[in-house]
Image (cartoon, rainbow, N blue to C red; front, side, top):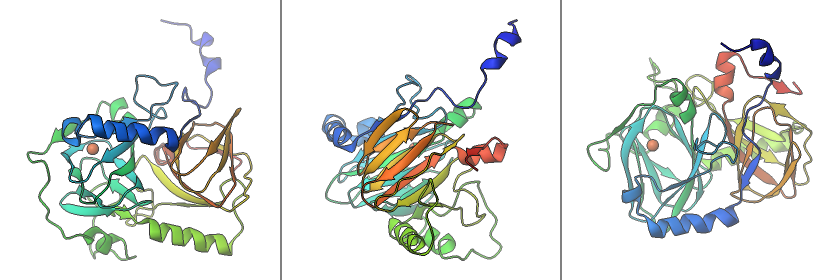
Length: 320
Ligand SMILES: [Fe+2]
């Protein structure tokens, strides 16, 4: 037994995670070094994890989310497996890589957001001529918390393909759904959200409306079969900051991982200030007050645990 009265007053919003940034200029040489030191076959996934400095030993970027940078060289295959956690990819650099999910190969281009729903077989390969790097985001901590982290290896390196390229896009990515469609899982069955379309949507929105005082122009990715988030746990967004944008202060209970897709600027998080450039990745912890400023036009990708918090009734923001 312990005295509750000595504990209860300390409960408050926020987590142990702290603001942090990984700068592409510093990270990229380590990724290339990793590519020389270990093969994708040896590593299974050649990834450098972005662990929050205040969460050492957890592997997590926030208390609920994982972030890692994966590099795959021409001709390499990251073998097929599946696991309970949901995964997302944001391609940073390089052409010619693919992710195969449940019998379909999806090509990955810079800025594309690619989904790997929990417990789907997936493997990656690089059919191009240079290294390809992407950001992996997973909701691993949820599966761990609940004691539900299953994982399994596929008998072969690459899974057999049962669908033509573009199949998921045709079924779910054209504002149409197969008649009588019944969802098989909680995550979006649309495997790829190509950057070209996302960027075009943001550019058009930015021409027709006033920016949000804190977010600029921010769109969230939707599960086309429900209108909800692409994962039961993770909200995923892309936002456009006009050149010279000076955002107001904002905070919310979802801890977020941001990745700079284009442009540069400054993010102030509590008492820290970070300059950001293309491909830099930074963490805004739960309930940390932050504001964004853009030196040039800037485009930021982000994912957070907002979807899970909304589903459970915990999510809050300030100002509303
Ligand atoms: Fe995986």
